[in-house]
Length: 317
Image (cartoon, helix red, strand yellow):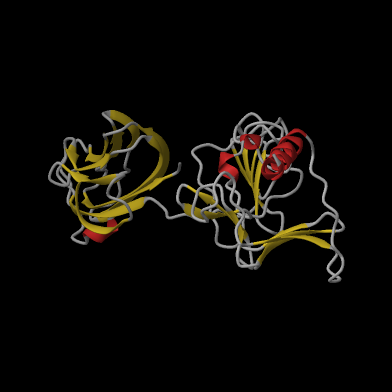
């Protein structure tokens, strides 16, 4: 009977411990004032001090004692890490792209992904950075400004008027200052004045032509074809010489088959000269031709110096 007493005591103690909380008193005999947990070789693996702080030497495993098991927490000496999917992941790095707060109001310091939250201050994207967008629109009726750091630039007024160096454009384009642009112009010298009876002048030497996509010589150089519709200034200098007494030399400007100017000459004494010189602003449709005709009723003799007869065309818009 006596041999069974230790066994009965152990079983009773086990039942008691499993049914109630365990209370341990800190042993301060060594001055540590801590409840120490030691390994089988009496090496401390952790302790709880009198203030309630728990210290664990090595990694803390949640659900497993293996340090490489997912769920283990460790301190590297510089950062906390957790074991996840077979790798250590830092606790101090947060992937904000995965936070639902970017899509709702949980994180007020972030811009919403939907773009519905306004900035509370100016946005400085940094030197050398670029904003790429297909559209930029004013947020209200005050208009849209694109200014340099001095406050001068381009302003789009509500309604569509654009101002350069003015915030109050009164026309589709209102510029407060000078406009500099590459002119579209051409000038040609005559090589053949034709003969009487509605014969076209022929243009040979080209003094200049700033843009062949707007105008160029066509039809064996008898025509100047305008390729782009718009307003053009057409200047004509046509010299006629060797006129007989009371003989008249006439010149006509015809654009797109329509007579714009019919300049009539005047009779002089034999052998004198007459020069037709006039300018007209004409609206030309695409592919209109500009022609200068000698419309004299009778044949006349012309000067040998063709440079005196010229045709100049300038695009105005």
